[in-house]
Image 1 (cartoon, rainbow, N blue to C red):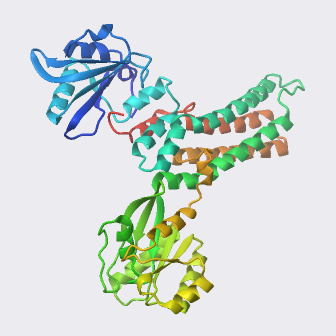
Image 2 (cartoon, rainbow, N blue to C red):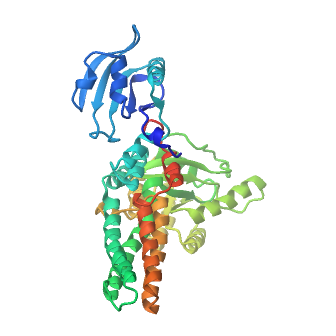
Image 3 (cartoon, one colour):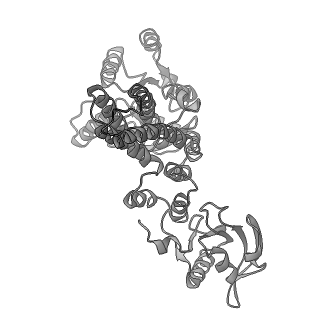
Length: 460
């Protein structure tokens, strides 16, 4: 989604609120003619003479025909989201009214906005950098406290500020080394190699921390994939239903009822968990069920957390110990959850408390001790780093650029070790600057911008 010069100076229009019937709808215009075009069809005050950040009541008219009574909010350039003239028209939420108003403005010379075009204009006009622009989309789609907080931190420049500080220090050294190239025949050194090494090593430590934060950032943004596993009829589907407070999964006394995956999201302590109820773990001669069991084992390998659920009335210590050993070999964090405490075997519970003291005892059917289970689940998600306000990487594009930055910085260190010539050293530093600049938008291409903003909703 690239734009020509003429397109960038167009006045654009789109519905900024969701499609469908509601109490109100907000139609947004941005561009040099946003206020004058609105003034042509607005009956009320002369909008061209009103101050920025004011709201005015009147009617939108197509000739003598009144389309609707509206409130018009004015944002005069550069004091707006896009740094252009912006008008937001609040109409009644009828889809007919919305369509009539938008068609009227298009006839007057406005153009329908492309996906993300309002935010792209804000970026191009210097309202914020590219990482902050991407955070706008993350903020819109945030559905938990932690994802909201991460998006807000990034949108307000937390991530960008850290990257820009790194880049500015490296730019200084790059310029000094390139200055040395201008004095190639003279033995001068404007940039201390020891100071350069110290800076690059410091940058590498920061970049490594940011790269390492991506696993947590991905969890915050996309949710924790959590598999509920155990042998058939252990109560996996009942547990999923109890956590969801709805009958999402079929519950039956017949073992092997769940043949595939049932998945849903649950918000626990401000974090989204993507719970997956799987087919049971057991040997079976049923071909379809066997496929489900095989796929369960694959799901478990890629999960961030496994709830190993077993029936306290129908499992012995030998079986539990065997399953626990298999789970430990997977290397995925897991919780041991004994189900049907309301019909428990006292001896088994006593043995479990002795040999597996971290076992949680619940009754999925009676919804007993589920809060304790949720607390233990949260303990396994390390949010200490996030809650202390440290920068968290949540965007795969940023992660990719940081990985490339790390390699370029390692190339700089290697070049210092083997004392490569200044032109090659400068090349490695410029490559590091390039990848850091890709994150915040100092380095962009039309294809990159098209890929980013095409994923935004129209009207944003």
